[in-house]
Length: 153
Image (tube, rainbow, N blue to C red; front, side):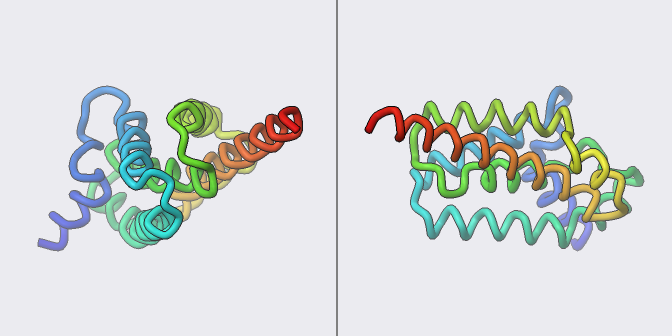
């Protein structure tokens, strides 16, 4: 039963088993959660913290279960990361899609320190690179929002 729960959560309800780009589909899962809660801060914060905490708790165990470092099917990090990247961003579908693209780019490129952190063992290695990608995504979006706000005034 424990292994079933670890597999179910770490693959975000089996999205991680999709044959092509499971991380992208998992990021879409995070985007869907964002769209469903429509920018409501408390639920957004709740789901973000819940998924990141669960990711840290189970992803190292999932690695051992799958027998591979940061196994491709472990995607809870992408879901939590996507939500983190959208934290404190106003609900707007265009912004959400830009955030999705930025997050996927940062997750793929692994700019410093993401690439280094990914080499860490266990849950830290699985989760850290996506958290960095989420922070970079959020920083870019916050900067753009402020820049647009300045031009509008």
